Image (cartoon, rainbow, N blue to C red; front, top):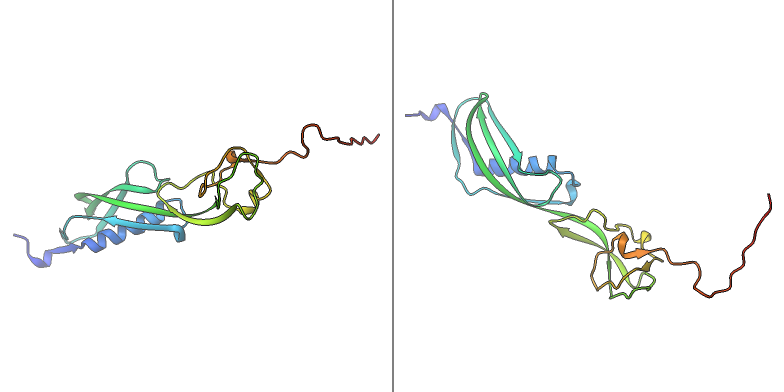
Length: 174
């Protein structure tokens, strides 16, 4: 039998809090834009006395959001004691440019058609346009439905002239 003096308790709160801290430290997203929830279904863990090390391992890629499974390895005085599975859910806030109304191919984007919005997502968009100035005055290359996030492949710089327009070409010698 183990006497109470020779044990220490690792609480579920301690496990969840340290898992959150580990995720915030390791994930590449800005700390202010993260919302992290950790789910540990187990009970408090009774461990022998000694120097406690909690080693977290993220399964798969660390450049992600959404559901992230983790493994917690507990070591006391550098001796392996227990391995626990923990689930977490990470949401990332991201500023994106979205359409306010449906756009047809060839429409020029103005403040009436697009706006900047902060969205929370499990899958942050790598190529979404985040600055409204990078979309204003551009032309839609395809029909874009209402509420769609604008990406560079949806827009292009408008042509300087139209087919059939008369143009003046000036050349300078030297």
